[in-house]
Amino acid sequence: MRFAFILFLLPALAMASSREEALTHLDSLRKIESPLKRLELFSQKFVGLPYGKNGPLGEGEGARYDADPLYRFDTFDCTTFVETMVSLTLSQNVDEFELNMNKIRYANAEVGFLTRNHFTSLHWVPHNISNGLFEEINEKVIPQSGQMIARASIDFGGWLMKLSSSAIQGKDMTPEDKEVRLQELKDLGPFYPPVEATLYYISIDQLVKNPKLLKRIPHGSIVNLVRPNWDLTQTAGTHLNVSHQGFLFRKGKTLYLRHASASGTVRDDVFLNYLKRFQDHPTLKGIHLLRLKSLR
Image 1 (cartoon, rainbow, N blue to C red):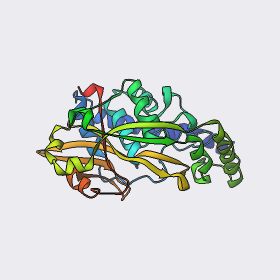
Image 2 (cartoon, helix red, strand yellow):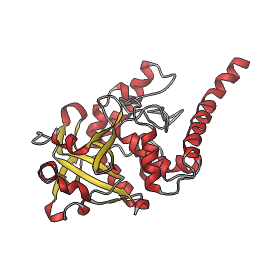
Image 3 (cartoon, helix red, strand yellow):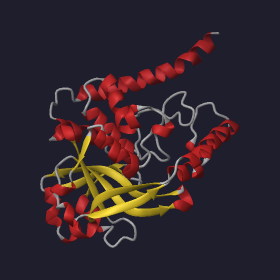
Image 4 (spheres, rainbow, N blue to C red):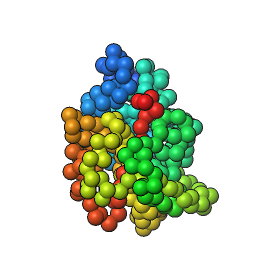
């Protein structure tokens, strides 16, 4: 009976531990009032931590499809790094932090696998502009007339039908349980027709040829790496427009990309050098910029 009681408490203890860790991080910068400075310092704290493959976050304990935690601080992929740092920056207590995580990760802050902002140009960017968190700032670098437009037919249903059992996460699920729940998601695929998503972007070629343009990017901007109409239909069931996200911070006169890199860790890279690697790349063509409205 005592053993059963301990098992019952484990999920609550795990959440308590996560909340305590969130509180520790929030307390560490409580005296810093500037949102921009908070964003810079919070993101610096996690440089060097490992990249989280296969999506380190989910809908939390007991979720039907992905029971990975709603937040964590030991590993990140590119998007969860941005989401977690923004949420820490905007929060004074753990309840606010959890609300901000849900606000940035889910449509209308409604936690669920199907309401998660899975696709950057279709879900994540427009939802987080409409909810008041972000604003687009490409025009601080060049006028819209000099920008390009990425267009992709994003097929959420096709993506659902291409999911594998690794997308289903749950502590005590058997392989059979996973297959049943995976099939539930696949069966929903036909109910989600493709939707065209568009995104203005600044070409890498423009930035590399005229690096002075980088001086116009505000310190603390969020950058999306744009691959217009990126064809992943064979592997992921859809086209995409965005493949990566991070922050842009200036150290002295040099602009750095701070990001959870698929190469292994959260790291800082000189942004111009990073862009030069992708000049004349067959799919990666440019950048799209956002800023937290609270940083104005």
